[in-house]
Image (cartoon, rainbow, N blue to C red):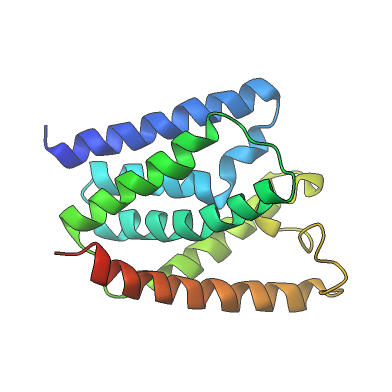
Length: 176
């Protein structure tokens, strides 16, 4: 079996352990956070040799890890298995970029994919969980953004710019 497929199985294992932890805690809605789904995309991308899926998963993980770190710094819960998706998925995604490359337009495809994931979150998760900020402004930001549409516009603009910058940096640092 090619090495990339083993890496894909590793990423799938990272997601599966973390997913089992969330289900055990009674919070299956947490399985669809962008960072976690990003690890699934990396797993699929590596196993199926899909550079686009791997790249989108990697981009989601970089941005998601920044959000995760900010949440932890603000007093959010640290779950021991979260290292598997956040760090494991990111490292395996980076290895996938080195092996398969970074498709040209992955940065804007990552935004389109996130918007779709956010809508899926809106349809499948409870509003009080606010998974992928699908229902309201993130807690603590309400004073800055009294309007959810204005918040989404800011979120999408920052995400698109972040994906573009990460794409450019990854091309310099990770690609041969």
